Length: 116
Length: 116
DNA sequence: TCTAGTGTGTAGTATATAGTACACACTACA
DNA sequence: TGTAGTGTGTACTATATACTACACACTAGA
Image 1 (cartoon, rainbow over the protein chains, first blue to last red):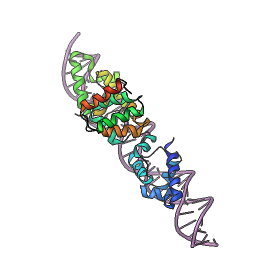
Image 2: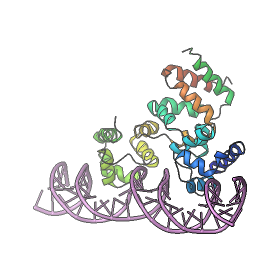
Image 3: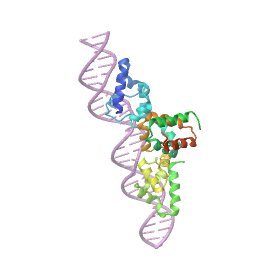
Image 4: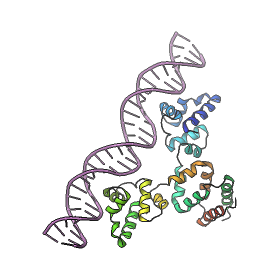
């Protein structure tokens, strides 16, 4: 799904329960011009910066990483994790590319449970 | 270590064994202007694009992911892996941020050995 | 009916990114 | 001793990124 269309959908959904989710008001709270948000939602301009996407996510109560992905971006903090140990994480990610979700989840769980 | 300085170091090292690793000739084979490579190596300009970094890596027989990391970038193909399943990989990476190398390696090995 | 609020069209801007092009002084070596 | 090759200084450029500013037509509610 395209970024802009999804934002519009989510915003209009929130709006049904809360009048303050008009394009103008959301734009205001997010800190961008209404005309800009309008263009974003209709895909007339590329998705905005990570900073703005994060604010949109928080305003619309959506997952920032998912919105960033829809926008074709990867969170800067994740990039930094990879850049600190590039070989390690490059190998890991390429290894996990085709792995089914549950396998990746199990791996994450094992790590979290701290059996290093 | 800074990107440019490292490139210079590696290039001059290669050069001791092979005259064709002059700045001009490497720039030529990589497909950029010598003046540009000169500025890159002295840090007078930000690191080049992923495309150019990859060519440098291949020319200098260095690991592309490592050079990209030094340049403050993450390979586009890795970003795409994350973007396909953003929640999954965002969680995993944040989970693994502090994990010691051997723990991450073990995880990669387990996955590779295909015990899904 | 009027007015406050709505979304959108158009035009413009600042900054970053990713380089090219050319001239210059220096060096090695044939 | 000249000339081919070296690295670098300066000036410029094209494209992308990430927006702002303002005017406009429409609509819902008091």
